[in-house]
Image (cartoon, rainbow, N blue to C red):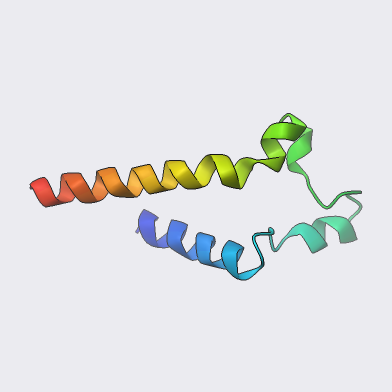
Length: 71
């Protein structure tokens, strides 16, 4: 179930040109850059979140499949 949610979210992100679909909504409600992650995270981290998280998702999927096959 969790894998399906992650896959769906990744497809929406990729289908929107690797840009969060909520960016326009954030801009509409007053965020200057359309990003709200800079409130809590350093700018370099917020800017590179896809580059940081995609490899982690790939490793997670690999380990999950590997453990599933061992059963």
